[in-house]
Image 1 (cartoon, rainbow, N blue to C red):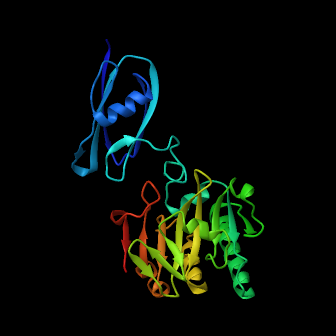
Image 2 (cartoon, helix red, strand yellow):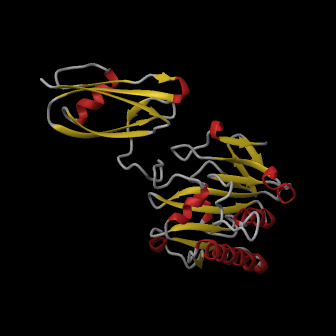
Image 3 (spheres, rainbow, N blue to C red):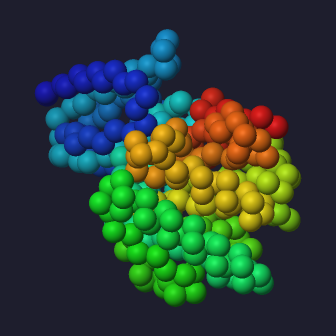
Amino acid sequence: MLLCHIVLLTMNARAASLISPWGSPDQFLELIHTRTCTQSAILILVEPKPLTCYYFVLYLTASQECFFSVCKSDHSKWEPCQDTVLESELTRGPANMGPARRVAEGTFLIVTGTSSQEHQITTALRQFAVYIANLFFLTSDAWALVVSDVELSEETAEQYNLILVGSPLENTWVEKYHKKVPLQYKDKTLTLGECAFPSPQTGAVFLAPHAGSRLALVISGNSFEGIRDAVHLATPTIPPMTRSPFSNMVPDYVITGPQFRARGPGGYLCAGFWNNRWGYGREISSCVC
């Protein structure tokens, strides 16, 4: 009987998919927990090593061909993947990883809010959206359509990445994206993990999952002033040496505070990356709260 011995050493890997000649997926799922080896079986040995390395060891015997996937859990243990699709609104893969600039790597729309009771805020949000669209055209020769939140249908939105301008109070699309990540908005206060940011002049730019493997980039805040500060993250740092919007020092999310205008990045209250399941991780974030 043919015996295959495969050793895969990974660093910072999250998922692996293999085609192996052994029994059914049910056998594999049972064996991965019992770690036993039978006539037509697989044995996986995974132990943490220094420098966040993990050994992935497979012992395979010849049988019918079968496809299976394993994923690393939040506790750094290899387990059968819960999702058969690599990228989804629950997990991240090559198509929906950050940083923020990746929202513009596919076709995208800029969606401006129209729900404010104050006409001047609605007008200003539309100006912000046009400003961002013009920056993309200037720096990247990218054509970006600007639409209002009330004009955008679910069917159309699913065909594009989205850049959303306004808080949940001004943009009807924004609230659901706050709910898809740990950055919450309630009572004009942003919260992330154990941190609360109640200052009125607090802005946020963050990635969120959208339409399966697509991305949404939300420009939100506790007030109009906070949103305006967040829009400044799209501005080139040394004009006319222009870069594409949100491409310079903007990770998956940034929260700006009252000192942002005076200190630039020194005025960030929080910045970092979401983990592989769109969650918050202290080890990949830096927050002052």
